[in-house]
Image (tube, rainbow, N blue to C red; front, side, top):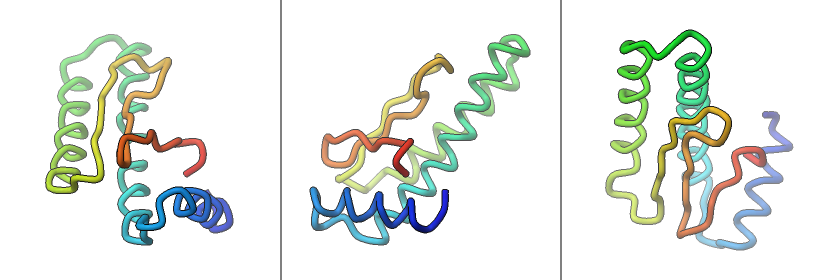
Length: 102
């Protein structure tokens, strides 16, 4: 994602939520990197077979995301194991953050 796309996302999201700051944007981008890792591990679990190591790594990523979100009341998260969909759904004040826009 290039700077223009990041700026466009921030402008769009901050117009709906004026309190959405650059710190929030950095936080969302950090969660997005972890989401991409979680998504890749979910795909691996299907393509390479359900291995214990893959699920263990997915649990580690989920725990890291939960620990990052803990204490941030504005955010909540849901996890899905099916790689055909979104495996990590991040909410900001009950609004889903569109990973394609970030």
